[in-house]
Length: 114
Length: 114
Length: 114
Image 1 (cartoon, helix red, strand yellow):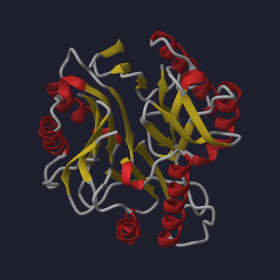
Image 2 (image 1 turned 120 degrees about the horizontal axis):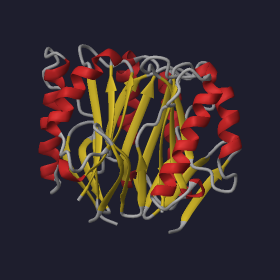
Image 3 (image 1 turned 180 degrees about the horizontal axis):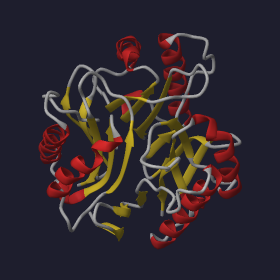
């Protein structure tokens, strides 16, 4: 059993590899002053970076869990999300409304194969 | 690494297989006019269908994450849930209250072995 | 495919092993009269016990999903969490605010390699 950890910070690893699966941390936008579209795009860009670091890509996504602070933001988020994913390799998905800290409006957790 | 995707729609795959694990999307009731019992039953029926599509069944469930819009719905939901699962092969479980869209009162995400 | 289940109760298994991965149920404090620090510590102690039961430990944690009923409890929770995890082997993490039953202020779901 080998576990590989990437982008290790004070509180968590941003990506962890084990047994052919890559788990990413809950990602939020670095610039929370952006609206829902901007925050979503920042997160998706970060997902791309982390998956690359772990030797995989969005074409290998398995699951996507999305937390938004207002379920009415879903259509705007979906537009950015649909422009991003690999249409031939869509992960599973769930989207629920929760509360998040400060101005953060969305947090995303994905897993991918590698 | 082979990833197999089932019930692929515009926004997601409803089931994804990888490395002996099957991941289902967050499922909600097609008919949201049903009460909590009816919505739960619709979701569990859909889970059965998707697991069969992926060549497995509820007896191989690993995890079950339940989102309800009112934590007080839990006893009614539990009754339907307990009548459904394989008593010899219970998955892990968590249940939290979030907000969901429209009249949806429950969303469930499961994973299974195959 | 072998699935091993531990601490099987009326509603769920508290830990499930499959294919080198251990999945724990959503854990809450047995004594919910404790504050956020006390509830967090009770859960982390239970995680240690369950991981040991499954033949692994916190040094092999992959992911950690934290649900709190007040996002402002996060700093106090973090202090207990940071004193507990293996600083050389941090899992991924996400923390969102939801509602939970009764006086429960925190629920944690982890996965680990074994």
